[in-house]
Image (tube, rainbow, N blue to C red; front, side):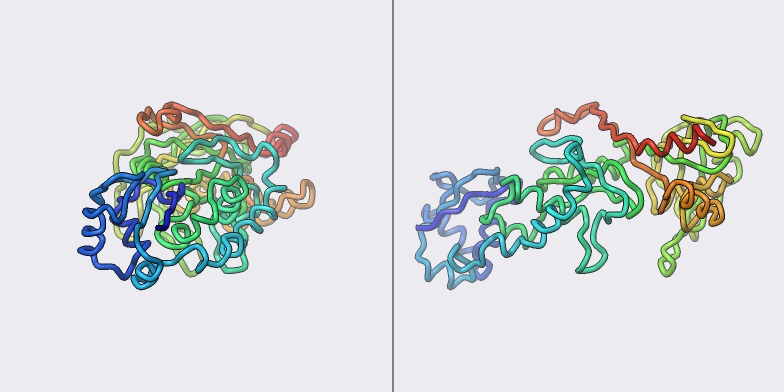
Length: 366
């Protein structure tokens, strides 16, 4: 007899799929026969295979070790120690936890976690040598005991805890992470249907007195990892620069496409208006790569420190005077819609994370 406890990374998986992972060489007919004969049980009871697993469920195989191995299964003594399998993630957690800080966990429940991503850290690694927030997150769960050695096989195969939204390396602020498949699905749904509202703050060049809306089409150049923005006539006018009324802050119901670009919109309002620089709050109505940075550059208010869309001369001055090394853009607030069931605790929840004090200081002094 062999027993396994279902780990957090295996929740919401159908029992028959779990068994196929445990015994990859076994035909379905064999697995269902073992279920009928109660040679494989779930929580000590006969199972059909259609059950959705929950963390802590007990799976028992009344099978010989030879049978399990013969169908490609692994036993605990066959596996390398879990800490060795997952050491990359433990190391990433320990390397980055000091930069994230004691108050870096902004929200946490059984399915998701919100964390303050530091500037200069990737959301997901781009090369094998990187230590990104993705690795930090898994390492955090290991250190906390929510991802154990017994979860190693499940983690390395179908599902692993992961970040849900991405921030550029030099953009800091709120990063959402999914602990479970259910959490990943729900966050993907909220991001896809835009019912999750995301707000940023940016220190920008120039004086911005009134709010407005920027709308138009983004085209991405993968070779240079940049985008080009083309505003649409009658859309996205800057109420300061254009001298007209701001476009109403209506939410889009769908992406509008045309050859060579995707429709995008950003709403902004000034928080601090200085003589040279301004601090803006921005709401993403759509969410595309470099959207905020390219939108603000298009209306003559580039993000301070932005190396791709900003003013290089001004960036040099900001670096010399304040040590700024990257765009001053920060994900500062996330608002959840009404939710229920397993995600009721998130219903109408607002998660906040203010940018560094330097954002306000630069705009108030200049």
